[in-house]
Image (cartoon, rainbow, N blue to C red):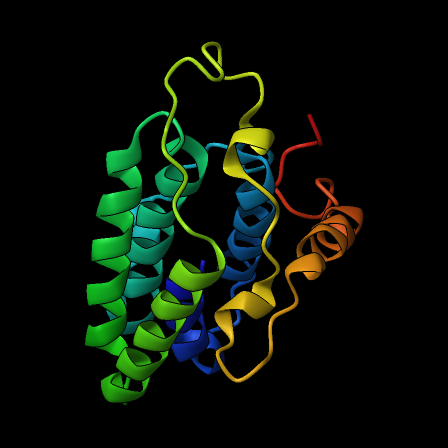
Length: 175
C-alpha cells in the first residue's frame, strides 16, 4: 500500500478522478480482509497518458496482490517489484523514495518478523485475517513517527467503520 500511495501522491494534483483514491481505501480495507476489495478491471483506453497511464498500472498491479496474495504469493512479489519500479520512474525525487523504502523495510522487518507458513494451518482459507497476523496501522509506513504496536487494531477498526460500500464501488460489504 505504501508503494501505491507514493504513485497516488505523485499524480494527486494532476487529476480529479476519484477512482485511484477509492481503490486506495478499498485496498487498505483489503489488507485487513482481502474480501473487502472487490474484483475490478479498469478499461485500458480510459486510462492512458502521462498521468492516468501510471495510475492504471499501479491499480492493476495492486489489486491482485491485496486480493489474492494469500493464496498466490507471487502476486505479492510481482506487485512489490512493479510498484517499486513504477514509483522510481514517476517520482521527481527518486532518492527520497529510496530513503523511505530502506527505512520502512528495516522497520517492518524489525517490528513484524516473518512467520513461517504452515500449509495445514488454514486448509480451506477461512481464517485469512488470523493468518495475516495482527493489523498494522498506516503509521508503520512513516519512519518519522514512533510506531505503537498496539495501534493496528484501533486504526483498522476505524478504517472499517468509515468504509461505505455504497459510496465506493471498489469496496465490498464486510464479510
